[in-house]
Length: 444
Image (cartoon, rainbow, N blue to C red):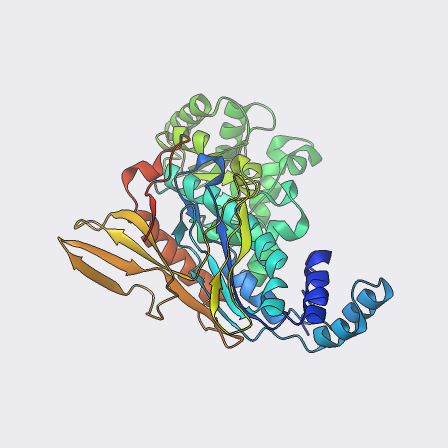
């Protein structure tokens, strides 16, 4: 039995349902959209992550006895609403950007079509998952590109909450990281895990040599030895004396890394350990990774920066009602007009346009239209060598989650999708400086 996700929400979601039930508007057919008005941190693109987790959370969005007893005891809603919640099962449709895809300002990442009451309850759940996971994935994607093909491991569990750590490992893996230090992420999502020893292991022993001997005895010569507890150059020499020239790797966690890495590589080569790899793990972000990518570093371990979105811990996504049926059954587009918080009403479909070389040129949002129902990757060629691809895919149909988006299967698909979608972006998308989105969003 999975734990209910029904109370991972805000108080006012339930009071809105309570009032709508009393007013007779709770069952109005409605369309909600989750989107970002801008790319936080002036990033050039965003990465959609968390979709699979959201779909799993929606399946477990159930008000059991424990949840209903809490709401009753605290008088959050009335008895009529409690009875309605007891039978709650999302029965609508959800469309969206497939996980791992890239997005831009205004992109309708999730489109929820349901009754008002069913759809409004998902607001906080959807935002809490997608805002965080997408922030991590966007940072991880930038780091992956900056690494120029060298592997990165996520090591940030101790810099965020225990549950966010697992979500962060998942998001980073989708965006190109190759492993995580978090064992729960390995168990839950099948992500490769890695790790050997910290400074405390070296300090535990009477000498650095004794620590290395203990680690090699336990893990073999292909292990990674941490060489910067005392003196780095002496640590490298001792590591090779203990493990031999077949030592798997040395890890450096301090110092002026470009200088230190070059010196360590030369020393390893001089000692005959030409195949011993170098991994670095010292407060890295996309900028330091980019600098080190041209050095003889073989892999990176990134902690704090990736799990906090490298300075952008949330993507500023919002969840808004954009259309509903009125009493006569006609659809009415609605939109917020507040200063700096304008939204665009109406159902929408999305196509990404490409030039003849296959480089993305614009995100086209068609107003008054709905998701087209075409398979992911369907292309249209309007002429002049350009072509469009449908972006939105069905995620939930009639309350049932579509296959292929959840579990390890969904993660593998999202990881491969991300690799392909980033490769389609123009070169400016890879810039690490603040700037405009890589492609414009155009409303049609």
